[in-house]
Image (cartoon, rainbow, N blue to C red; front, side, top):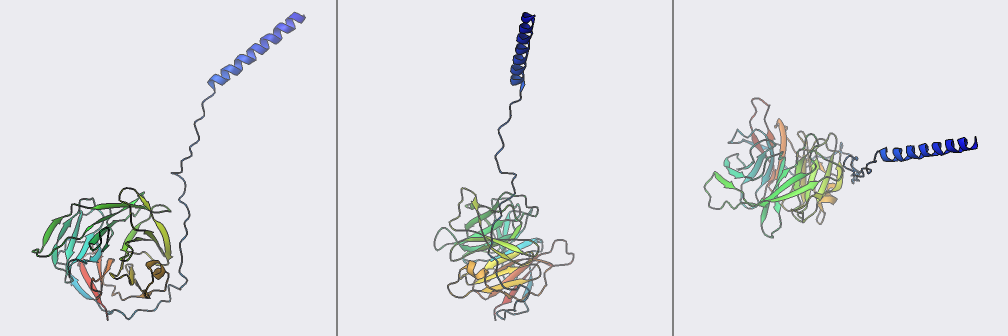
Length: 331
């Protein structure tokens, strides 16, 4: 009887040991834990917020209320989205169509006359604004083209194309110029993708500013100079303004004035001597004249000589409307 008990106990132990080994062999290998953060929500970033009441702003008397309005000679340009004055070629203005249009920048004068075309060797994903200012080589003027539109907030980065302004001296207009040497500046928002239509360049520091287009407010980010042309730069958050759906902006050639616009409103800052752009944006602006004469006004830019500012508009989808350039003269 004792032998039977010992034999049964031995069998039980052998069966249990075999079961454990079998379970160990068949146990699934657990994958390493995914520690990536590509699906994590973007980090919360802090913006400076001005203390003034945005609904109680004064109106500036620096500019005339009624603009001089001229129709563009080229009425095939129906999605004009920016305007910037040349610093190198007196009287020349640059304009561009936004996303999905040919990769071209157009040159006009203040009367709307066609002065030619710049052919850009990059696709027009969603070009939304342009600027002119200094760049890497001292004494030269550069063109900045903002591929910053992102209606669905889907792009991991946005792009600024930078190239030297062409010298049009002695040219017979209209001209057709191929831009061959161009810098690609890739920028990323620190808090996730944003739609934007406002690009500005600080003429004193060469910093690049982008303002988001959002309902009831806009967030301004800066990419400090020198901006990398080989890797993606994460921009720095700076100021949050309670400004509804910003569609364009500009900094004056001397760096003492700022314009920010929507389809219905323009804000204007006059900066005291020695005030940085960041410090200026925290100051209370004034409302600048706007005649509400544009069905979908998007572009705004100072005249190169400081004599006033220009605005322009999209007209696609607005039957009977003309593509125009408006000028608000300085008083």
